[in-house]
Image 1: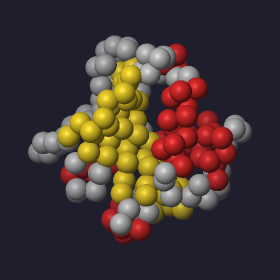
Image 2: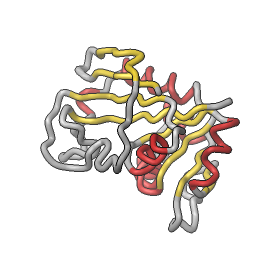
Image 3: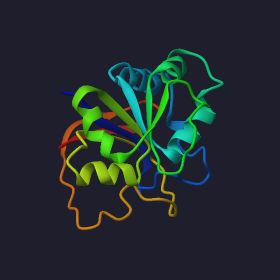
Image 4: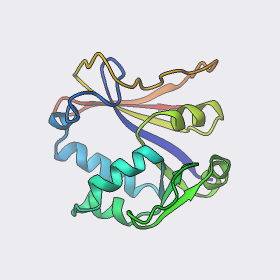
Length: 175
């Protein structure tokens, strides 16, 4: 059986898309990149929403190196009702949400970003692990990690906490 790991960055006030756009970058170094490579190497495929897919495709397609090479070559599943084509980033298949449980049965999936997909996965009992990378920044405005949890009270257990020399901390939560 597979699992779904959501891997996301957030500010101390829970913002996942802070302004300026590069608010997370000062807290990334080789140590963080090695951890990110380990996450993708332990995964069979990526599970992404349309917006995250479009952002990551644009950012990673022209890059090279161990992390970029792995991201660019691994299979990607994009949840979208509106995307007509996913030809701009190799190994990409557009799927519907009803296909996620089947993918989870057979694949180790990593999902980047955190938005409606993460909320839906949590609601439906499909979120196995949340890797939350916190940076020591308070943004004040932007999209919240779990903006509107509906009637869901999401209960997770902290399984690991790690501080990185660049200033970020990774908190790993499991169901």
